[in-house]
Amino acid sequence: MNLPEVLIDGQNLSIEDLIIIRDGPAILKLDNAAKSRMQMSHNAILEIVNSEDLVYGINTGFGAMSNVRINDQDLAKLQVNLIRSHACGVGELMDPEHVLMMMAIRANSLAIGHSGIRPHVVEVIIELINKRICPIVPRIGSLGASGDLAPLSHLALGLIGESDFVIEKDGIWELITPDEAFGKINHSFINLQAKEGLSLINGTSQMCTFLAEAVHMLETLVFSADCSTACSVEAIKGSHKPFDSRIHATRPHFGQSVSAARILSLLSNSEINDSHIDCDRVQDAYSLRCAPQVHGPVIDELIKARESLLVELNSVTDNPLIFINSDAEIDVISGGNFHGQKLAMLADNLAICTHELGSISERRTNLLMNPQWTEQKAFLANEDGLESGLMILQYVSAACLAEMQVLSTPASISNVPVSMGKEDHVSMGATSANKLLKNCEYLSYILANEIIASNICLRNIKEKPGKGVNKIVKIVDHYIPEMNTDQSFSEVTENLAYAIRNGLLHDV
Image (cartoon, rainbow, N blue to C red; front, side):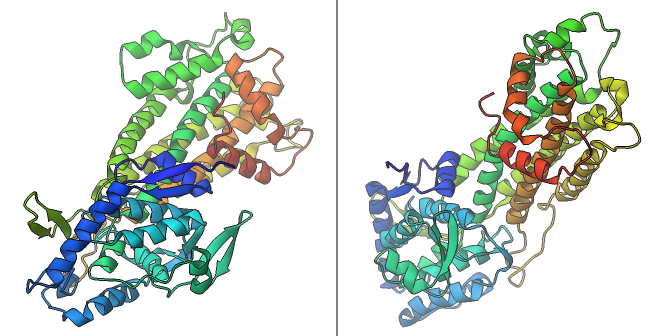
């Protein structure tokens, strides 16, 4: 079996690479040029340690204690103390797959060669990933500046042998000790040297992990939203005219045109449309005819988010940074690349996007419950009054939407100054990105409910829907039971939503 390979070179890590690592197993390899850059940077650290210079992060305290000089014999202890004191995260544990992604992002950032860390440390991280082994990391603790300190400290705590690990065996994650974890890769625990602890924990790796997962999922869900729209158009025997390319050429936003073209393609060769060519319905509800104008902006925002995230994945986000000029002169410069404002604002914006996709989908589901639009029984029940049909399916979508509304409130507008006021503006990027992930999950439930309702509608229409819609119907049909009587749809929604967010409709 040839496993997919991912090169860690500080320049080319992609969202797709991270999904490969998440789904694993995969083989990560450290680029030789990256090793050379890291070694040069580490040599610069050694030179500073042997000098009389006072340099933040190398021979000083941290944060508000950055002016306190540390004796040379205590530099290793300084790094260990940093890890221990900062590893105080709480709450639910990060998914192990997310920890593996976070480890890869951290390794790639360090591989750029401005962090002063030894290649050996990154090689150990890579070997753990290749063996599907990762430390236990609580999710909550990052303020998104100075990077993701608490979660990355738990990662580093594992590297120095002071935290338990999990290992994946046949798809199941099992708890193992640090000794067992390092025995699997034939390495000893990392003995941190000057600046290495700070390099490991100072960066945007948790934020990037959640955002990468969310962008990947939302790209799937916005396509699925076009699919669910096309199904609903056919289910209410709606008009295809709002998706005419001539309309969208007069307002040529890229995403809007893409969404309209996709929906129209799915509706092509529709017997339903042909049989209602003389229908006296003038205009459909906004949730149908304005779908491209709502879905389209999400497509546009996703394109921007992907571009920005790719920059971030291949950036140096710790502090201070080591620069060596052509004359071998060393500059150690403190800055703020760890600040996650860019990621926080991207995630908050995308959370609003998910809400709007969910909002318009729930409205389409509402139409499918109404005899005025479907010319079928209320709530698609078999017997009026005696049965409730799919009534509560819409309630559940509305409840999911309420959850999404709360989670769409931007976290990036919050600020809590810390470290005695020295770190006086933080991004809350990890919070923003994590709630975006939750919104994506809720969105998948809403889209699943729309597809369930439209599918059951279409079963009661004798004419065939458009070619693409017909393909969707066949794909989802085995997820949706026959509606012979009232029944619970909880598992149906859960299973279909899971399949949708994992690409069920990709091949339509």
